[in-house]
Image (tube, rainbow, N blue to C red):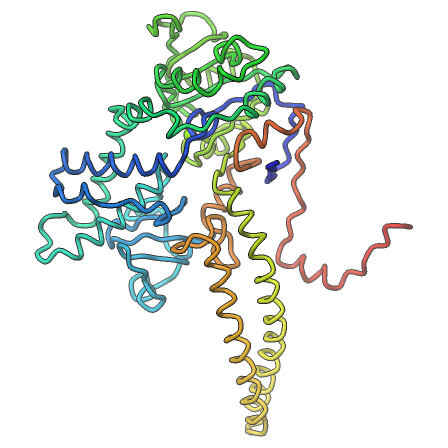
Length: 470
Ligand SMILES: [Mg+2]
């Protein structure tokens, strides 16, 4: 069974309403197939609407070319993976890795300012296809002799945004999903059982999705209805369904709710308070005031940092949970990597005292104006270089377990990735899939850990072990 990871204490007993994003949260997608489709649809639109060469239609898609949480540098045509402090830790120009020296030349500092409009955080519904295609197009532009067929990097980035937006609006992606539901959509019986169990505990369930009513109905009919046991259908299971909610605007603005007639799909204006039913548009403000629910009695679960949880945490006090699909594989790989890291740590434990000793001897030489320790220093430098030689293949082996181009999603070296930092900031709890959360008791009190600060490690070293028996 999967697990729920806690950033901030969350008492489910206090939660009255559980809200769900639909795509990739309530409804699971086969991400690799879906990203491949998104890649193809984007290319088709670039060719048709933006005059890109037809040869692009043959461009293959490699799912592992990108990971979630990358940043595009529009001006330089680079794609970056950042640490939690916005330091560049991995970078590519097009499809080519940028080495450390070149990176230093390009960026002066390893730290970048994300407020600079040249940096675009890729946080779309298909971030992998988006980043991978940008990398491919930059590469192709560099390869062309006269640089005329493809526009400059910034234009490529803007054109990608344009076709992405189009693909969302005109339904070309959704039409394809509609035709091949079993290729793109994963049914999850445990998820439906979990929803019904939460309802037994008196929780009210609602959906707030940016998808339209007809697409939502199609997916919910397909994934929920076959498994409901105590309800007639999803319409009966969810108290309120809000379609075309325009998140994150839903959380900030005051758009009007329109009521949808489930039989005809027709919409009408609302002149009464929000009640059970199916809607379009609306706002979080009206939702909480009409239903007379306190913001911290609502838990909203989504898969998208910007669309689903960022504004909720910044502007409203709703509790948040984030689905991080990559976690399942990442955790199992971390387990595989643990013995390798243990070996690395063991070697580093031998290296650090040598470094300290060398510094001490060199200081002594500087301060006394002598050269008496040269031989000893030389010998220890040799030992350090032997240790480095042993560490380097171990680290390589460890990295090869993860994405071959970018490494882990949640980490970069020993630091947290920028993506992990955002998960930490904006999600109260997180998990690999919604059914992991729904498998817990609706009475769970999720407790956060006492998180170690840098100086805690020092305290821990000198702390006598507590005798728990007495
Ligand atoms: Mg979603």
